[in-house]
Every structure is written in structure tokens, then in C-alpha cells.
Picture 1 (tube, rainbow, N blue to C red):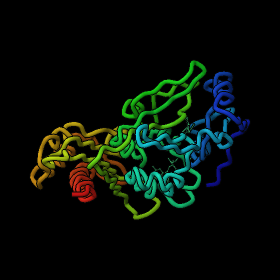
Picture 2: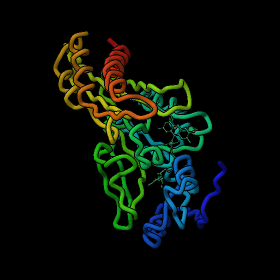
Picture 3: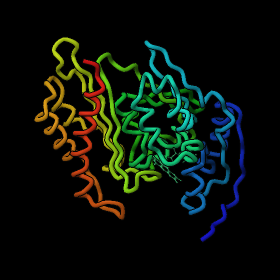
Length: 294
Ligand SMILES: Cc1cc2nc3c(=O)[nH]c(=O)nc-3n(C[C@H](O)[C@H](O)[C@H](O)COP(=O)(O)OP(=O)(O)OC[C@H]3O[C@@H](n4cnc5c(N)ncnc54)[C@H](O)[C@@H]3O)c2cc1C
């Protein structure tokens, strides 16, 4: 059935400060829109009814990608998913992020949808979340009071809910530099090969000791199997300080599977999701290990 959009006023601020001032003025009546690929369908379905839509598309500061070897990566919240997928610096320094971006939606969705929109929409299946969680990303949030910085793992509160107050926007993500002898992988399982939300998504980053090759640091994160994207910290604990042989990896995979709290829905059963967390965790660890130079 064709549904038209409810009436709203469209505003196009040119700076972050102007956006924040408008949010302060209109409060709960306003919604920011980045690519609109989540927001517009929600407005059509009358799940949200903003009187004012504040577009973020005319604010170049929000689309910046900056990298330094010591400071790491700064990613503007309005970076398009396709920008992340195609960026040479991201492909070189954080291939895991480019990998996650490359499997989100279709070319059209990646060309419109943004990183900030993916995170702020807070779907448990958001493809960009697990990779950023294992990379230790921080979220920079702005309001008229100034900026505050939190770990991305503290950003999600529940399905569709974040810590953002109505007068706050996500400005950028900050990702620390990758450790030497470390690599990551993101594996997404969907029902179809393309244009499908994750039924399960698993990201992992493994760092090895330079001398003896044991696991110095391990980070694992799961998507679509809990009310928010989550870290699998017990499974990480199984890996740290060990030689990563098959038995250790299998134990970590089984532990991750127990840490998940999936639901059954039309796309997959709880049991299937839980069992696939184990399979994908094992594969993500192995893929990350295979990428670390001997
Ligand atoms: C056909 C289709 C396929 C899709 N496939 C996938 C998929 O495979 N994987 C996946 O993860 N997602 C998928 N999506 C969902 C969506 O495309 C992504 O989540 C996308 O990244 C959202 O970005 P956006 O810029 O369009 O967000 P918008 O729709 O503009 O915004 C989403 C929400 O975030 C808020 N918001 C946006 N930016 C900010 C900000 N800077 N600060 C505060 N709040 C903000 C908005 O107010 C809104 O509530 C799909 C969507 C469609 C329609």
C-alpha cells in the first residue's frame, strides 16, 4: 500500500552549531536526518512523527575522515557507508571496517546511508556496530553544553534506543590505532546473500604477542543476537594469554554462543541464531589469525 509522508518542515542547517541550536529550540518535535534510509520508512509507517526534520547533508565537517598513526581514525557521523567501504586509508589501516561497510544493504543504500544513522537507529543488527565495538571506538556527542565522549559500547541502550538526549547529536567516531600484529574480521549471516539485515553478525579483533605468539588481546562483538550489539567478554577471556589452537578457539566460540541472548522471529529461531554465533565466532577468530603476518 502506498503511504504518503505526514507533513513536516524540512530544515537544512549548514553547521553543527546551527543544528544544535535548532534541536535545542524544537526539542522532541525535531528529528535529525542523515541519509533517511531508516527515518523515512519510519515516518511513512508513523512510528515517528517529527514536526521538523533537520537534514545533516549540508554539513561538510560531519563527513570528514581523518587518520594519523598515533591518533587513529576520526570518522564524521554523516560519512556515507560507501565512503567507508571505498576509503583507501580505511581499507589499509582498518580493513575490518571496510569489510563491514561492504556488506551493508545495497549500493544505493550504501550511497545514502551513513555511519551515524546506522548507529543512532540502534537496530540490534546494525552492521557497523560490531566492528566498531571490537576496535574500541568512542562516540563523540554534541549538545549546546559542549561535547562529551563515551565508549561506543555504552552508547546502545535497547532496540532503537541510545543514550542520546533529544538535544544531542552524534558528531563523530574515534577509533584508536590498531596494535602491531593484530587483525580483525566481520562475518554477517543473512537469509539472502545481498540486501539483507544480519540474522547474526560477529566481529573479532585478535592481537598476538610479538615474542611467543600467544594472544595478547582479543575483542569479540555480536550483532542481532541481543537487544543491542554486545561484546562477548567471557569468550574474549578464554582467548587472552593462550596459544590459539583449535580447542581454545572452539571453547571461545561455545562461550560466545552462551553469552548471546537471541530471540526467535520471522527471520530465524533463537536456537539457530545461538548455534550460528558459535560457528561465526570460530570463523571470525580464524580469519583474523590468518591475516596476521607470521
Ligand atoms: C532496503 C534497505 C536495506 C538495508 N540494509 C541494511 C543492512 O544490510 N545492514 C544495516 O545495518 N542496515 C541496513 N539498512 C538500514 C539503514 O540503511 C542503515 O541503518 C543506514 O546506515 C542508516 O543511515 P541513514 O543515514 O540513512 O540514517 P537516517 O535514516 O537518516 O537516521 C536513522 C536514525 O538515526 C538518527 N540520526 C542519524 N544521524 C544522526 C546523528 N548524527 N546524530 C543523532 N541522530 C542521528 C535519525 O534521527 C534517525 O532516528 C537497510 C535499509 C533499507 C531501507
